[in-house]
Length: 344
Image (cartoon, rainbow, N blue to C red; front, side, top):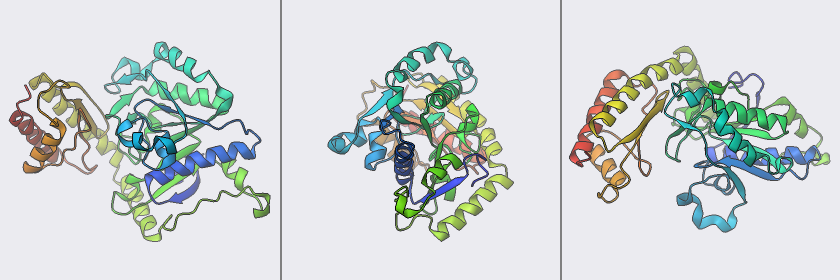
C-alpha cells in the first residue's frame, strides 16, 4: 500500500470509507494545532461532493438528500462553485482550465489563513452524479493548497485502486496529497477495511511521548482487521501483477463508445462521459415517468443486470475484470430497458 505514493507512506488503518474521511479531517485539524496554527479550523470541499455519512464526512458533503436531516450536528464548510466539469480526458478543459480557475481562486482567497484542509474526490465525483472534472483544476488546487499551507485530502474511496485507469486518480493530475483515503477497492468489496495514508511530516507531529498530549487518539474496534488486511494485500498484488489499471482503460474505451451510441439513439439522453472503467449519461429531467431512476433499476434487474441510476444520471461501473462480452451484454440490456420505458 505504501508503494502507491512514495511520499505518502504512513498508514492509519480504519474500517470503512466514512471513518477514513473522519480520520483525515481530525488529523489535519490536530496537526495544525500541534504546529501552533490554532486559527486553521475551516474546511473546503467541492460543490456536488460526497464523502460519507458520519458527522464529519456529511459536513464536507454537498448533497442535501443525505445531510439535510442532520444539519444541527454538522460544522460549516465552504463549497467551491463552478467546477470545470468535462466529458473525459479529450476535453480541452481537461488540460487547461485557466479561465475557470480565476473565479475559483477568488473563492479560495477569502480566508486562506483559516483553512485546515481542502477535501476532494479526485477527478470523479461519485454520488454527486458521476461528474468528471479537469485534471488541470486539480493540479492548480493542489498547488494553491501547498502555497498557503493548507492540507489536501484526496478521498479515493471510489476512484482508487485502478478504477479511473490509474492506480490512483491523483495520478491524472500528477499531484501528491497530504492525506489519501482508501477503502472499497482495497478488498474488492469482500471485507470492510479502509486506510488513511499521510506524510512523514504529519506523522512526526504526533510522534512523541504520551504525556505531551500529541497522540492521535482515534480507535475503532475492527480497524486494521487482520483478515481484511490479508485480502487487501492480495488485491493489491493482483491489481499490480495483472495490470488491472490498463485493463480498466481498455474496457473504458469500449464503455464510452457504447454510451455515445445510446446518446445517438436516445436523443433525450445527454452529456455522455467517462474515464477509466466509469461511464455515465444524464437522463431527461423533464421526463413524465415518475421515479424514472427506480423504474430503470427494477427493469434492469429483470433483464439480468444491476443498474442504480443516481438521480438523473445513468452510469456503468462494472467489475474491473469485466471483458468486452460482459460490456456488450450490459449495453444491450441497458438499451432494452430504455426502449421499454419509451425514452426517445
